[in-house]
Length: 164
Image (cartoon, rainbow, N blue to C red; front, side, top):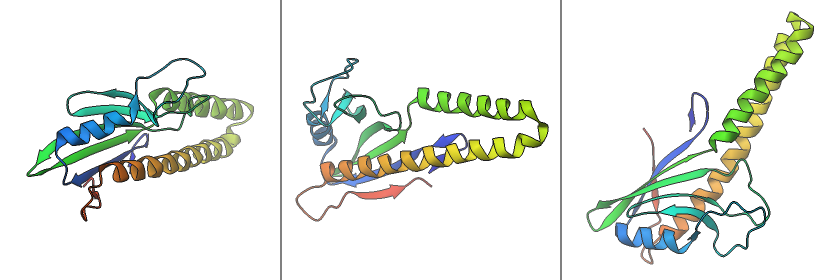
């Protein structure tokens, strides 16, 4: 799913576990964020988990991947279970740098000739496609992790309901 400006994902996981258990399971997989270049990984994700919300991203041993989605989630009660609304987007700095890069490349190419506008536009479009594809791969990985995390022992498969 895409916003007009770039990659974005939104879906809802229906699960039979209550919201408090959803938060407990997510919290068990998340360590506080660290700004150190090399951090000892204790858990697969880092971020913040509050009462019924979380903002997390994948934890990497040696650096920060600019395409790893920022995952925002909220667990809401649904009968005996929960709806977990998930939104994923690339980091704001990644989007800003991508836009600046595209404008600079287009400007440099068009500086030489107005006829070069087509190739400049093509280069920017190719960059957008590569960034979007990379982001989508990371979204699939994070989505699968969340489905597995929120699955119960019964037949609940963590059904996803896409945004309408």
